Image (tube, rainbow, N blue to C red; front, side, top):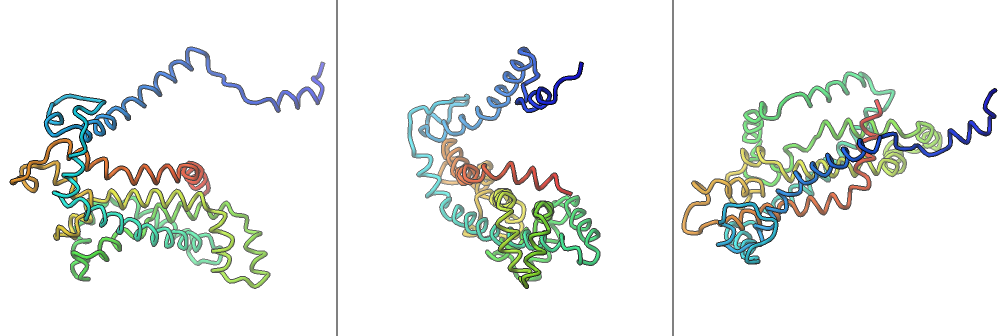
Length: 298
């Protein structure tokens, strides 16, 4: 006897149930908690040491709570190691560089979806090939080029290097492919320019993708180490990653009259991470959706 149509439709419309057995669900929960602890415990240890006193921070053990609570590590590292200037440098270079990188990536992605573009697939393939070249192999040529252009020891050099991101271009291209072509065709019938179509239709419908590349590009520029290292020699242009490297090598740049305690080193790490956490809290709503849709469209 066949099942009535209305019963079959009701069965299909029921919400999907978790098919895992109770033991499997417990295993997944335990595994996720283990991964969470592995990730969170080092962060708590860094935070606890950063708020400990100079003497207590020198004790070689793992602690999850500050010993002899103090903020002298933050005060010392901000003033003695010129961390304030490095923070300003990283903020300026990351914000300005990310702004122009997002604009360039969005425009390039929009160009790559145009059917009238000659050799469109070949250009997209060329962009993808650049992602396969290790960045360390280009350091010598990058230094030589920056030296020839007079970009050594300048904010312009820190901003221009890494301004174009192949990953962001391809992600925005794939995201723009999800926008119905009928919208742009209707706008062209109404004599709208390509810039009008780009700014009025594609960008507003691609906010998750824009948020995703903004977050990823900002992280990349904020944590960039090799490029600032090879094109900057003046301490007033050092970014936070360079200062952190100096703090982890007390035998050279941090040796001298002033001793750098462990609480000051951990305080520098906390100060460096705070902007990334704030940005993630603002962008997490768009981040997963933007990366998922941008990666699934071909």
